[in-house]
Length: 210
Image (tube, rainbow, N blue to C red):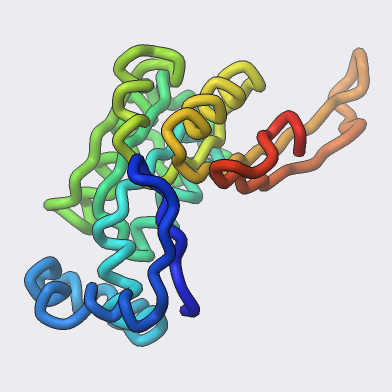
């Protein structure tokens, strides 16, 4: 890669390719178990030790563990992310199983806890906090203050904007995802369908402006 922009409490700073290489080498080997290096071999060939080390140490929050949020869990685990904050107050219902891969045994369980078990099935020592509260809850807001990146895949705009305000206040990059189908009044025929993926970076246009 060319470089990385780090946004944090101390402000904004850039790390170029040569600086990022310091994350590789012996530091990388001390972070990664032999089994992890084998599991992520193809990632390391693509990203290098430096890139994989950054992913390994990044804490990602996923708010909303429906279809889109769950896909993010699947992909982030595959990319080698090891530190997660999972937030969803809902339990798995049978009607969710057209888009969730968890199976019948997951019905009635909290989505966040099922997703945590999925991560631990491949990475037993991953650091995963599962919060079964709304994103507006104090426990959720406190946890979100400490992450490096937020994925918002929530159902309603009020929750979406609450997460975005928190991301702006604490200078945390945010990927906002959404998808939906609008049915014609009085029947089950689709009238409109669509999706969105919007990236918010501190000091850029907010979601409302976008």
